Length: 504
Ligand SMILES: Cc1cc2nc3c(=O)[nH]c(=O)nc-3n(C[C@H](O)[C@H](O)[C@H](O)COP(=O)(O)OP(=O)(O)OC[C@H]3O[C@@H](n4cnc5c(N)ncnc54)[C@H](O)[C@@H]3O)c2cc1C
Ligand code: FES
Image (tube, rainbow, N blue to C red; front, side, top):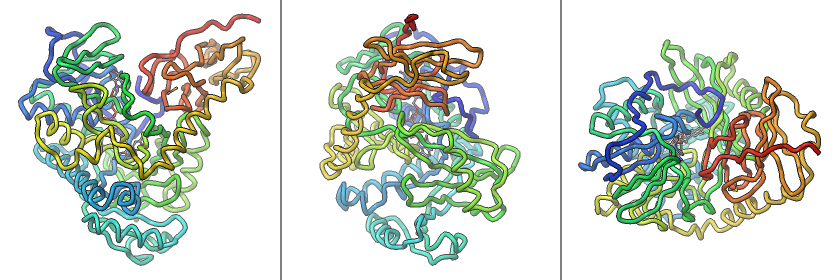
């Protein structure tokens, strides 16, 4: 099971599950990295290169989380705009953010080059356009990006993209990668450097000397733990109030002949992100993402239809769509990920708050955590510190928490339906039985799968997502499989509890 049913264009060409063991000879370890996504594998490789002994734990396998659900833009022209980052983190903070994401792209390039493998890595320019052709925000961004040491230029309409896009900002030295091929190279490097892989589900981590890692079945001890599960599933108060989970949607199909080799994105809210990709048969594809909404709120299967329509309008010639998928993005309230020491747990390191720049956030996290864990100073440490208080983003911080608190009103709302017979095949609905809410999914074969609708994380009522056939929590983004109730996305560390639907 991955985190969703929809199928992205990226895949693990080789089955690497054979590298995973299900038990270890010793349960006293040096470094445990939890999560075999881009963040965990990069951290594992950096720590192995420091001479540490590393075990990577994943409950699913290589890249099975959000990493294979990305659109794989590698960019230091960050989504949150430099004029905002400078306001939130100061001019030095914006400069460090730009430098750290550039370092991440360089690191990925170096790993690809050293492997000698074709990972679809290429340096390309990035183009930002205004969704309403109003250049004023673009002008602000050029100024702020150049102040942060990027190379950004405002181009007139028609100079880079068709004139209908209006003026665009051009950013130099961005990049693309085929993340399916890259993640395999990264995993192979980890293995070659002596890293081991354990298939297991962790349910908690406690800091200390040593740390304790509680598994669904068993326990491990380690001197150092890197929690790279995309959102922490162990008990830590460090981040969940400072970030929010969103679903983002992607479609892909045959590329129009004039699609440039570039990253392209707009400034709409939610914004669109576009790139070209050449598949294994040498066919050029367009990848277009957008239509983001908060997880568990405003779920809408029409998102794909709207994305396709938007793509046809802006890139005429994109007629035949072959793929559509969705994934989870964790948006930090101040635009930058939370990376570094877990303030609640000694010798535990966090990587979360990936935002739409999670491939570079995940990679720079590895460089930063390796420095901190090895006792070296790193100039990015304070910027990404998970314990930072986003005081200059207080408005956003309050809004996100008020939004989460509001979702508890589902406990006093009427149920979706009264009678389970009214739930069509392939659909879910929440029913009320006394004080309980019951999440009922009727699978295609007519069977009813019933669970306590109370999210095990902090007690919100889950909502049905027709698009991914999952139960999604509107409070902090935990997601559960409709049929089995299994965890698809944290922060929950427990699945939905089965619950009988008593006859009334
Ligand atoms: C639609 C979409 C488009 C995106 N586009 C871009 C883009 O263009 N550029 C960009 O930079 N970023 C992009 N991102 C973000 C980026 O893809 C992610 O931020 C990044 O892949 C996250 O990597 P990760 O290693 O932190 O997490 P993941 O890849 O989710 O890895 C976490 C791993 O932890 C494992 N795990 C979780 N819980 C447990 C547990 N309890 N026990 C054991 N293992 C566990 C999972 O199985 C998983 O393998 C996009 C994301 C989405 C969804
Ligand atoms: S994710 Fe926090 S209550 Fe559900």
